[in-house]
Image (cartoon, rainbow over the protein chains, first blue to last red):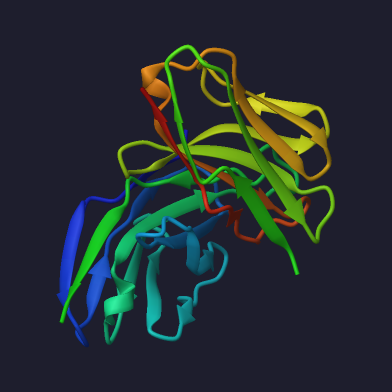
Length: 119
Length: 114
């Protein structure tokens, strides 16, 4: 079974600084997708960034980027120029493709990392 | 554009009472639908998923059930709530037959069983 591990229950960063959140996963699949979701105090789940395992290039979305190490099964999130609005719980998630399988788009989540941003 | 509605936002129910949480998706057809539970503000656990009307798969044995009476409607139910059913429940959807899209989530229901 696939598992996702976030080893940092809590992290903090100063405003305008950079922080990296860690995520590792366990899978025997070669094709899969990885996501980082943000859950602010409103508890609305918001997609931050996604990475397809077949792509070697790391995904980036403005101030958010990932370091995807497929062999190491590692998928970390880097937040640059941190802002107060980045304060939230961040979840790493994994899924395998719908096509040809029985995953039906199910996501497996890590336990989350609470990020605090200090002004 | 697609939207997902989930209600109620907050619910306080006594032990032994029934439960019905509803989720509807607009702007798409034949979505995959999911119910997740988040306990104690931590990770999300998949409870049920559905790939079509009347098709429900359960991920974990529990006191809850799910139904999909219409293509874009997903309902989470219980006949008799337990204290352990308290938590934050999230409905989500994904496009069917498309492998690389993310899941879109409703705003969640905070359920407290007293």
